[in-house]
Image 1 (cartoon, rainbow, N blue to C red):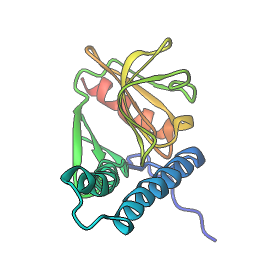
Image 2 (cartoon, rainbow, N blue to C red):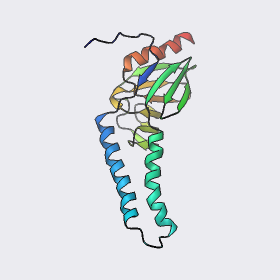
Image 3 (spheres, one colour):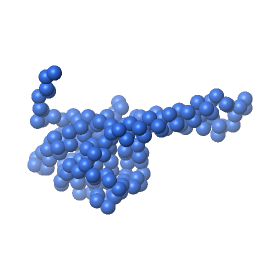
Image 4 (spheres, rainbow, N blue to C red):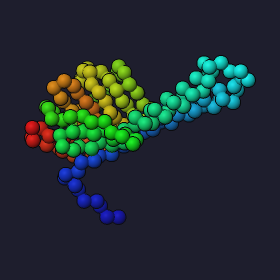
Length: 174
């Protein structure tokens, strides 16, 4: 098996899932699908609207969570793109102050708003190390912390040190 060449100008990084994220996603998916199917199988003849919502809300939750899943990260022209399923979110790195690879960055975090493990760890979090930060993560052991003047962002690319080197070029070019 031939090894792949090391690309020092790589711009796309995958977002691999940790074992924990895989288990949380599997368990939550089974529960959400189970709720919908159980309600669907036992639907009364004249089910009230709230009952119908009970069938569809778990499915909608699953679909929306999948749509927001992080598939990868792309560095391009002083921007970081969070690659989703069929779309991407953009974060400007023009004022990037520091980049830190820290496998324990998200340890002890409390989710303030967002998704805590259904297809990703997304949203606003807080811990004693970083304060308030936004996460676009799939494997917390691969955490890279991006320090911007008004916010802190955590991403989890497949190669954290290489990603950090490429992101630091934004600072050097600043």
